[in-house]
Length: 107
Length: 121
Image (cartoon, rainbow over all chains, first blue to last red; front, top):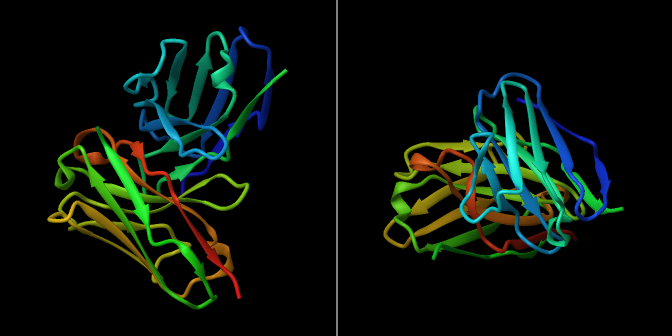
C-alpha cells in the first residue's frame, strides 16, 4: 500500500497570504495525484487532478505541482472561503490512498 | 448537473449488515467507475471500494475485503455497498464518488452528501 504523508498537519495563514501544502508518497505515483478541499459538514471537493490540472470551476489561485513522490498544492492568496482541510490522494495503485490532511486555519 | 444521492445508512449492531445505495444522475453512468469513501468521526478520508463502469472489475481496501461487496445496476444508475459483519470501526460517513477522467479512474470529481453508518450495541 502506498502511504501518503501530508505536511504540515496545520497551517496558520493570514487572509491574502500564500499557503504551501506538501504531500509525499512512499513510492512513485507518477502524476496520478489529486487534491481535495473539505469544509466542516460538507463532502470533499476535487481541486486538482493529474497533480497540476485544476478541476472545473476551481479558481486560478490554486495550483499544483510535482510528480513521482513529491507534490505541492499552492494557494497564492488565501480567501476566507479557502480555510478548510485539504487532502491529497493517489490513484496510481490499488488500494487508493489519501493523506491524513492539512488543516488551513486563520492566523 | 451531476448528482449523487446516498441512502441506507443508520444504526446497526456489531455483526449486523447494511446495504448502502447511491443513485446517480446527470452523466452517462455506465461509462464511469464509481467508488465508496468513508470518514470516521473527526478523522480523515479512507477509500473503501471501487467498481468499473461495466461492473466487471471491483476493488477493495484490506480493511473491508471479505465483508463488503460493491455492485452496480446500470439500468437504475445506482451503485451499492453491501456491508456484512459490521464492526465498531466501520462507523463513519460513507460517501459515494464518481470517478474522474476517462472511464473514471482519475480521482473523484463528484461526491454525494454522505450517509452515516453507526455500528453500536
